[in-house]
Image (cartoon, rainbow, N blue to C red; front, side, top):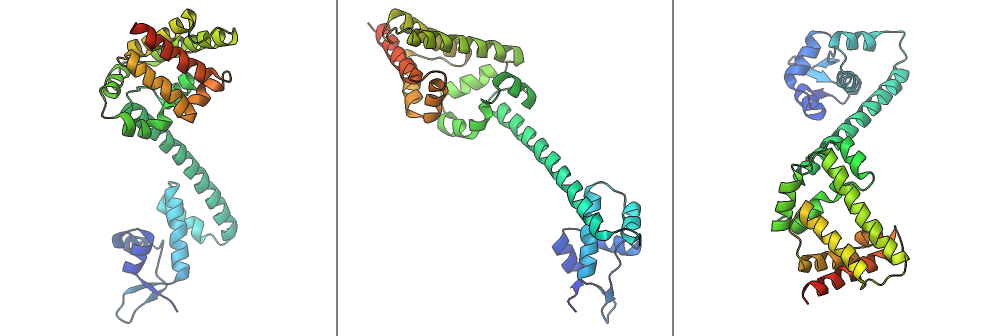
Length: 254
């Protein structure tokens, strides 16, 4: 017969030896055997009972109720295990959702966004800005622009973000309309829209020079995620925005 000492069971289960002694004293988990020296010895049935005890404890049941459930002769223990598995699975799902919400809030705060997960969804929808939080900090965390953006956005509430989002979408709509109307990216209207795009960043997030704006426009083509952001609105829009930004930057240095 394979048997386990109280120390073995404590190491396997993660509960303390003191807890196992207490379970023995109240009759909740009495070891099936004793050594010749009187030490507690547990077998596999004891370990299975302990597993159920711990599962019920995770659900918040008091020890007295757990004991009655385990010792009730009319209870189908296999059916009970299935119900217990379902209950623990549901609890695990709730905990995962709570953990995800906490992680999202932490990431948002790290980025300077003081919004709850629900507010983030209400403002950004599926374009969750926290999904790239680690990448953003790794790439730009040491830059003045990142620090300034974090400083400014930390003061923004939901209403501010909704306003900024609406302003940004209006500028993109303006660029999209100009492209679909057939105006070249080098036209005055397109360059004016690109300048509005630059000023929006400059005023809301961080100082954005024309040179920095060029770099952002280059990224719109180099990074498929940025390209998709624009081209999902209208095929070719990423290239059009890029060209309009460059044309506007050229105009600024004439």
